[in-house]
Image (cartoon, rainbow, N blue to C red):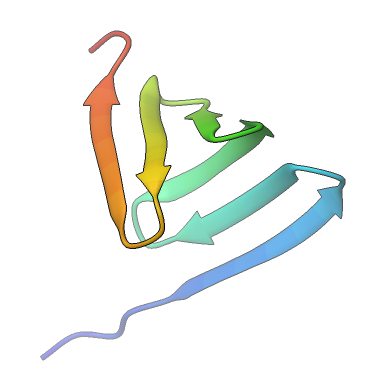
Length: 57
């Protein structure tokens, strides 16, 4: 079994930088929508239910 690293820092209101074994990504929240630097999007429909999708590959 290998080592796993995950960590994140909040840079400001709605902006987060996360690092893991897979690399570094940044994300920005716009109300109920979160978009990250890898093209992933998450939409919070209501508490406990979130839709995840991709903007590009």
